[in-house]
Image (tube, rainbow, N blue to C red; front, side, top):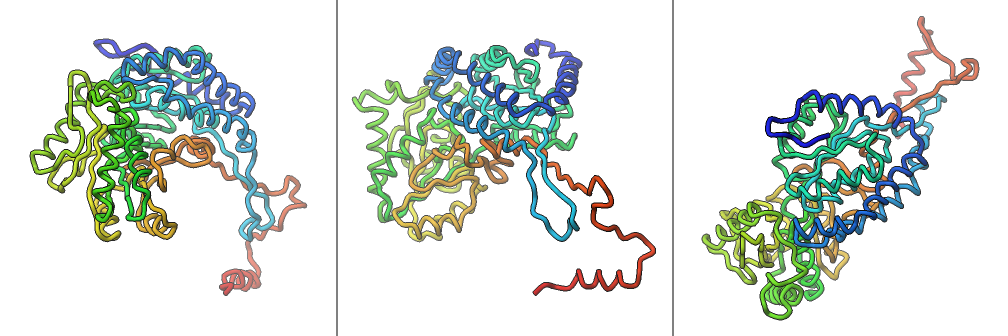
Length: 476
């Protein structure tokens, strides 16, 4: 599909594309596991063949090697392809009294035509990784990469063309107008990766057609550092995790709650590790080849305003704090003494800035977390199994990692997703296959009625009431 022009695409072109894919979805629904797996492998092969272009596009638009984003994809491709036939097989269910001797099973059938609206922070991976589950489930797909990273968006189109999947997958590029036009079409399911504001619009659009939704968003991901945590290990892992893609990661830690007894030691270790990783020669983090850039000047200015607002209201910059908005540079930054009247206490930072606060009782830490919407990721650092289990039991999050951070994404054996504000639905591996499938319940009576369970038709005998009363009797 062509890009939006100055006057906008003719709506009929969207409708024709949708109609074509809807017709195509019938054949895709009847495709075999072998055929679907072959398409998934074609997709990955095209990604691999274009890896050098992906690398350059990442450098240009995010200041980092684009190949780095692709590492998880191969493992998921192999995992899904090796198991797909088993997932597509009928799933027999337990024989229970309600079946009265009949057979029952579940078949996972395709949703039909799926729309995928992708984010920009890992532009190729986020555009293509959910397609693995969509293809595995047998769907036709429209994917719209983010217009914020246009080079990568065009690469997504090129990858689909190179993989020769254009009959099954349509790539739409363009701005918000393109997304708005697509959302007016009666897709069977919509997958969106991005922020809460657009997520609400997607849900409203989906409601018009009773479409299913998968929303992968983010939020303010908390970290708890207990008094018994390995301080050096926690500081190194969090310094690294916060600065992946310059903090532009939905799972990145956003604020750290540290037991007051180790707060000073942790903060010192954190700032030291940030210097070691991103300014080892003392020339300034702007010279680091390992620190990505903010995607555009608008987002760089937004992050600067969050820090400026906090400082103006009394927060302290403990490390970093340097900005060059025109160069899209934000230094790895640590701030403390953040209060609830500061914007940074409530808004997702989505940049290389960490807020560090202390707590004295672990109930105080969970109270701080409970004040905010349920996060996509929650991180706990402790040497104690009891402490880890206690925090897991007293918090709610889409995902949780103990003694590490941001390592829970793209693990094909785990369902990935958020809770409420941070997301709806699960993707990845088997969870992705099920997310983009309808579990169709099937009950079979005997093909020969003489071999099936007896039926009871009116007029009912007097004994029928006694039989029903017996069925209703509690078993305990």
